[in-house]
Amino acid sequence: MAIPIYGTGIFNVAKESIHYTIMFDYYDANKEYYNLIKRQSNKINEEKRLKEEMQKEINTEKTIINGNHVFPVIKYAKIGYKIPKISFVVFYIEIPFNLIKGKNTYENIYEETTAEYDYFVTWILPRCGKFIKIDSQGIYDIYGNYSFIFIQKGMKISGYESIVFELQDNCF
Image 1 (cartoon, helix red, strand yellow):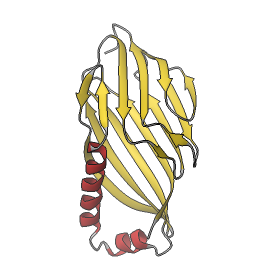
Image 2 (cartoon, helix red, strand yellow; image 1 turned 30 degrees about the vertical axis):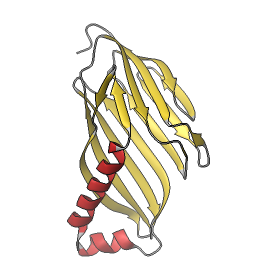
Image 3 (cartoon, helix red, strand yellow; image 1 turned 90 degrees about the vertical axis):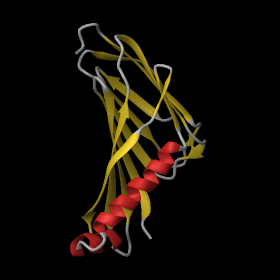
Image 4 (cartoon, one colour; image 1 turned 45 degrees about the vertical axis):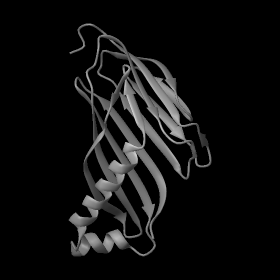
């Protein structure tokens, strides 16, 4: 069985949606995904299964943007490997919403937990965007229209996060 060892998330804010990519790296002692990909046996079925499972998981969360409950959609799930015993799963997600000029607020509410592995999250705003406030566990840095959040294994995760950012009038 594959064991998760690292996660990476990238939120890219666009005019009508947030494009969100999550990658999970796994220690795969039995080389399950390596063998699956090499033989192409059931690869598509496994990706479909993973997509459905992640959609179920995301549906347990509540995502609110600018006061409106929105529904993230898993568009694709892809599997691969870096080396035979290190595999990965990538999820491509879209969160539909309408940006507003001025202050925008993204909130995510989910079950309180403890991080089982390290993970790194990047938020990318349009060039005209500016972060106002980040309420998230972990260590974060802001550089212009980019923010970087690092969560360490073992860290308590409260089950709530928010990102507040501002967009100028002529942003799009």
